[in-house]
Image 1 (cartoon, rainbow, N blue to C red):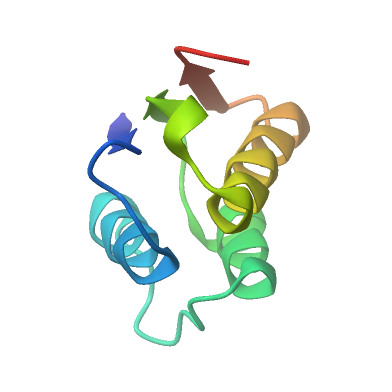
Image 2: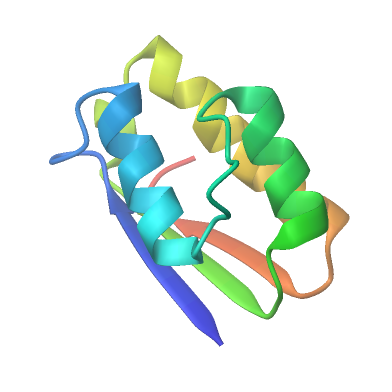
Length: 88
């Protein structure tokens, strides 16, 4: 099982988020580091089971909040993908 902790107290920009996701999920070298590429990887390339723990979500700015929404959408789509958070 893969478990990734994304703490938005430390993740301040998209580059840091992409770095954390690429490392934690073992994303392929061709990962394009954008919303569409992340969706493709989450729905095609990442093997489950996966748990993403989102921490300090309230600190995520509008750009990062789009990624939080995408992670939650992926969790709703996949039975082997869980996304937890400390805030809605």
